Image (cartoon, rainbow, N blue to C red; front, top):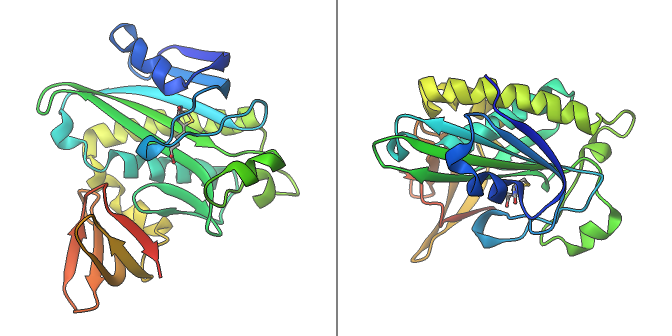
Amino acid sequence: DLGLLEVHWEIDSTSSELQRRLPTLDDCSIVIGEMQSAGRGRRGRAWLSPPGMNLYLSILKRFDGGFAGMTGLSLAVGVILMRALDELGIRTAGLKWPNDVLAGQAKLAGILVELSGEYLGPCTAVIGIGVNIRLPDALHEQAEQPITDLASLRGDDPPGRNRVAGVLIEKLVEGLRQFDRQGFAGFVADYAQYDLLKGEPLRVIGAQSEFAGTGEGVDPRGALLVRRDEGDIVAIDSADVSVRRQ
Ligand code: BTN
């Protein structure tokens, strides 16, 4: 049940392209860019997207359940990406809540989920994924945080970009169907396997307040569970909170 598959040489953003054509595209349509001139990251940040080395891919997925059932989708996509990396023989990466894919504290991949539609009726997700496969040296200096790539993690024999795309597409189509049936509850056990914050001392920083605690995993809605130093466990689901390892 694959929709269209398009590869562009240059595009502003593969996610923007799907957004523009949302009404006319079939479910599971995919756009890939060799490079992006205006790649978008979370929180309004840019995603640097030079040609030739990395994967920039977006997929459109329609759901009947509405926004109400979509909590946890971006975490589920993190799990799906980890399943793909597992199959590619990358075993040193993990997830930092909500959905950063890190290896040794450096960012290996990014996920941007954009929802539109109705709260209880049909809704559509545009899921954008950027995977660093082989980064040009200059990008390390331009990036706002430490970044890494598959070539550094598998120096002996890095997987080719088409293989990464193929495995990722297969896992996405399968995993998004699983999310449609089970919601995030079906991914909680797998998330735990990749959770880099579990058992870690954390500092949770919100707009109004901040506190210290320990990561206790995620709940079936995708909220982060933190045991505060006072002893109680709180569930954090606002995307406006930032969580740091102490
Ligand atoms: C993040 O900030 O961690 C999310 C980065 C998401 C980048 C991908 S690359 C393909 C797709 N197109 C975009 O413009 N962004 C996403």
